[in-house]
Length: 454
Image 1 (cartoon, rainbow, N blue to C red):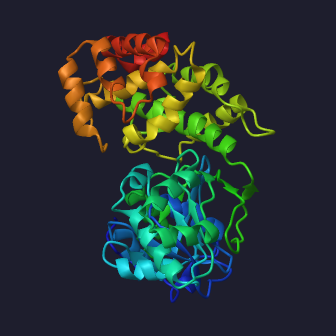
Image 2 (image 1 turned 30 degrees about the vertical axis):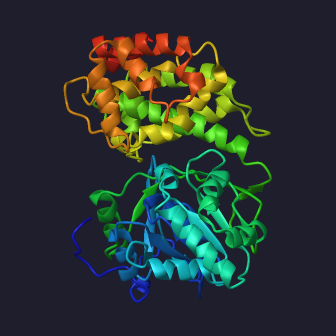
């Protein structure tokens, strides 16, 4: 975070903000939403949708205090810089009215979930958090139990993470942790709608904070940046009142989820692994590699689009082209290594589901699998070490070390990781053959020549 050089952005200094920066029309008088996960994505997405309504947010950080402490010092105010090809537009967001640190204020968190003041709990805690029964799922279950014990009002728990059927995933993580009485109450009073969220939000950097300081004349230690595009599709299954979000409410989110997870997130991960291996820092730089865009377009048209039925009125190939335009935005410096994190948790939805549904003719879709395997090996094309930030990093590295340098053996080793790779993919001989061929090409020639010759 940038060093503090000017007064903080707060309620008291809001009148000093220049007129070309958009300000909140109103600040909510009270919180009606508890959000778990204080990351940049929430601040650039759900909190922006909530800005201007009377639905205040309490923003809770599961682990690190850095962001919530910055928000608390700024009365919950912060800026979002929308980055387009022609520069940045800033707005101050005022929907966050309070903060919470889950690790240090667990009892308060449980009391809030039990309180009738909170109508909706939203979550952006990343894919791996739903597999940790001692973490967020337990907090939700214990809070629901308290709400049930006092006969509270209905509660909606809305997952905003990139998971298929994310409402069902959240319910499946929470319900087994409920006692019989609390579960019976929850069956009638708690809903878990699914949602699909979409906006590219890079991690904040010193440049993010410096841009905000130049524009505001004030320091903003919680500033974020994002692309112009934003979308939110929500299953219309609220247990109680529904917030005044300008979102798409539908009875079927699944088709939107598949389209986004496979076309946007799947291609994002593909470019991240290829780019990291080639020495590109960002996704937009990766797309500028010779042959990269053509390969991405073919991947969408030939492999991803045939694997799904898009929502009514949507065309998967046209959607994919728009995704590539968004990725090419030079204002969005989305780092390859950031996107590449947690591959073992992300790729089942982003890649393996596509392969499983295709079944046959999976030649090109095996390239991202090969790129991930080579990335997990830990060395870029020029010999630079690559970090493997993944919950299964140790097991992945052990398997690859045991396999040695043979491409077939390395593919076999990773596809044998059955906690990650589903059986239809692991047993697909065409995928194995194609992935080994791509991996051999990446080993011999590197990403740049492999893409040019693809």
